[in-house]
Image (tube, rainbow, N blue to C red; front, side, top):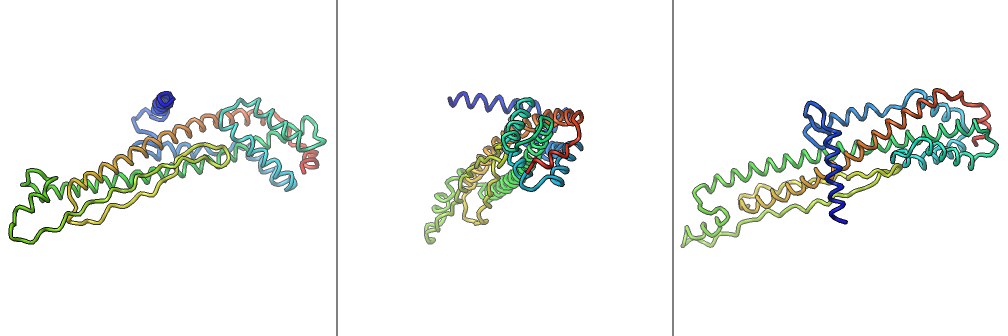
Length: 292
């Protein structure tokens, strides 16, 4: 089972690379230019005029109680939209819920109300996507901070190694130092850099479409510049930071992959919804009377 999950992860990551790697070699949200693809996705989160117009009409004309019922239906349908269910089944699901909630609607009115539900589902999906995009940006900033800490620590290690240039074994500098002055007072023990608490990456799900993402962790600072810190303890600290960074990279790439797949499904759904709305009749006044 573990091997199967690992194989899926590798396959998913390879698909992500194929999808998100533009022709100029710049990488997507998990790579060297993380904001480029996110910016392109954000520009797509605009509802077509026909869809946004239907939502505006519903908010303006429908009674609050009926509007709340439709909004609740939209939240129910939204996860299936994000999962890529086919449009006909989504429309049928919306029509069933409308029929069960509102008596006296004609087939045309049910169809019109179902389109409002699907429009609301799209808006809810977009709200979740925006939230996850914000989390990806925060994760990218956290990873950049972690890279800067690793770089700073590398310079720190180089400075400490330069101080012990003549030593045969830097890791044994305490023992070597204790032999240089036989009459001197026993030197105090060298300080050690406490490794940072291993960052535990928390996977959460967005509130409506239940899309999994990784919560951005708090990045711990480096220890104070204590001259007593040994090179070996600093190297151990650096290894811990690099391990944390590798874990953050892997998990954020999976989040970006899930988001890419959701954006592709959203694009197809929006296109179909918009095209069918263009052919549908204007919203009936009878709908206003019965949606309550």
